[in-house]
Image 1 (cartoon, rainbow, N blue to C red):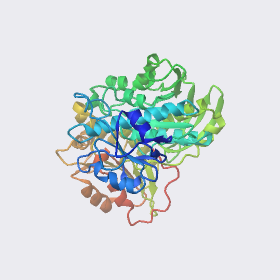
Image 2 (cartoon, rainbow, N blue to C red):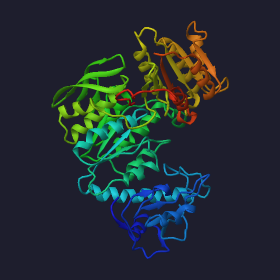
Image 3 (cartoon, rainbow, N blue to C red):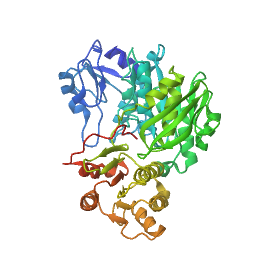
Image 4 (cartoon, rainbow, N blue to C red):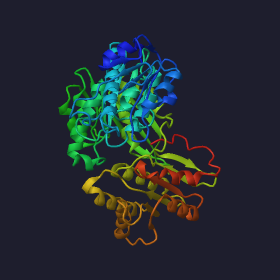
Length: 501
């Protein structure tokens, strides 16, 4: 965040000063959690279904905040923003609030305006904004890009999957006068959302990873999803760079939608940044030759799953554009560390049981990739059984039944030893179990349990040392508790090196 007075903040967001003459200066961070506000910070008061941030405004100032961004006067120095115009309060990306009058959306819009102002000012100097979108892999790729760019200069990236209308401007406001790179995830729940996020922090480099079926229930089709994801490359300037995965036809087609220079990545021979001679070790970690216009170098990823090759190539393309050499990129890709939780987080207990905690989120593409990783990790290991503990994949609309059914059938085709479907007979996940039992001669190999507690009881009773257990579902199910229960009270030793997804 650059230093601004409250009066300057009010001018930027179109708000009014209350209980202040506007002279206090914001020198700290911008926070929507009052517990995190420090000296000189700006507290963003967001109304919510259970907690209204306005009630914590006075405490935030008492704890050192220079002021508050609010929807109404709060009795302490504040910039109060007006309500949005009728018909706008709950439209577009900036509507993720539970209040009925739209005041939360108004505060979010003001936060976005503030972030846009700060990024615009910083972009006059050395700041480069990198935007990333795709149906899966955004968080992993964001983490990889950040690690490749940090040796080149101060880099800001969001924690976890902070990629919506709140996390996006919050992350952008982490950038300061010394920041060289701002790496941002961009998600969408509908058309126009990515375009709005791109307005908040205009990207110079845009990365599109893939177009899958995540959120197809909201968009209606993969083609509609592709149209929305392509809003990122449409937002790039003429001197910008679009990094496109040529292995995905819907992504490759976005080249015609941007005025920026296109860099193709993938295993396609047409890709400027590509992988050749891809192999997997017994832990499903990929090695390949990184091939670029400026040379080639060997890479051994500490990431689990062949699908990580594409994510690594996209990150490599960004780093090469911003000044890294091929050798530097290869070396840094081979030394990555895990940063975001519950994304193929691999831990092996002292007795040899391995848990793949990939329970942060799930869609058909990411579940298929995770199952293939599980199959690869357990293949050829004598006495090892593979377990897939799977739950619902949300927001698939009318495709939900067929998508869950196909995942169950895939588990059979990949020779997964045991499938545990969490959700019960009437749940959206149940077709996974039915698909598995109909695909082959499966009997007890697939079981349907009502909840995470039942899954934990089953696994505790039946897993053996040396088994490999994958846990994956949409985050709302909380299936990560199964992974935690398997590791709780055990001597888990050290986490397997490079446990990232």
